[in-house]
Length: 81
Image 1 (cartoon, rainbow, N blue to C red):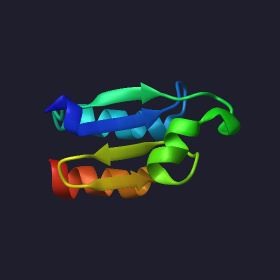
Image 2 (cartoon, helix red, strand yellow):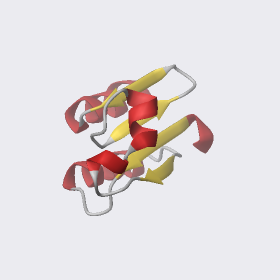
Image 3 (cartoon, helix red, strand yellow):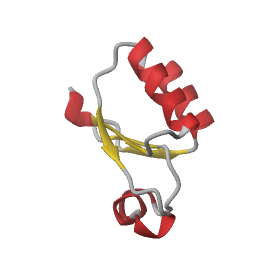
Image 4 (cartoon, rainbow, N blue to C red):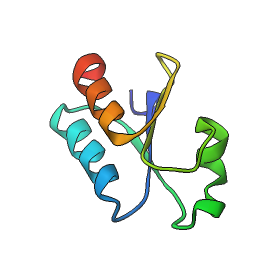
């Protein structure tokens, strides 16, 4: 269900694009929440993940909040695929 997976991303971010591509390749439904370019404006990302960097994936069904594209890619491959 798309509401269970949320990707916080920044337009033009290559790390965010890697995660997006992996989710798409696996056919995983998800919602993208686009963030502000300035770190200081990323209050929603900070609220959900404790930090302001992107990408961040939230898997509400499994209770997972995960930053860092390499970790997210591994999670997509091993858990969501």
